[in-house]
Image (tube, rainbow, N blue to C red; front, side, top):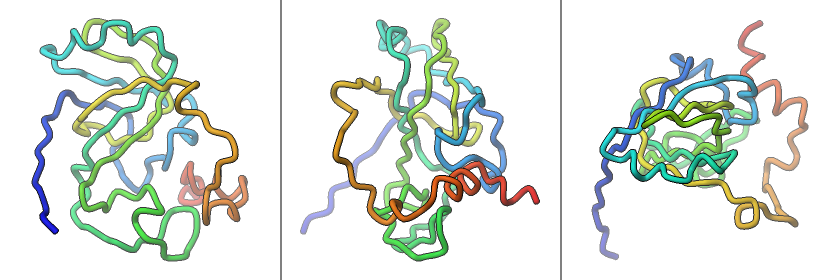
Length: 164
């Protein structure tokens, strides 16, 4: 099978209070109240037209500090090994990350966001709006994560167990 190479261009920088990967909340749902900003490079600012009508946006970014590829990983929720594609771990073959954040305000080419779980200085690849009618699903299965209690997910997702 032929393997093609593709290249992506960084369109901005994500700013957040998170500087230590081991202390960064795992998912946006565990980042309530944590604010950050997305600095879109000015040449892309025309693409922000009408984005202010959306409450949430997806940020697609490059895991620039992930230095290895692991096809099997132990995710934060449990101590069992899973395939990388059954997790959201950063050690992926293409190192693409995605987070759903709350959009608070847009001022010129700066987006103020909340519920951010991304390291400061992360390269931004793309932005897409969350559209409830297209993105929300019923009858969803969540694989191995269904056996994890909400309490354990909350503890590990906020990384509160590391603060002890």
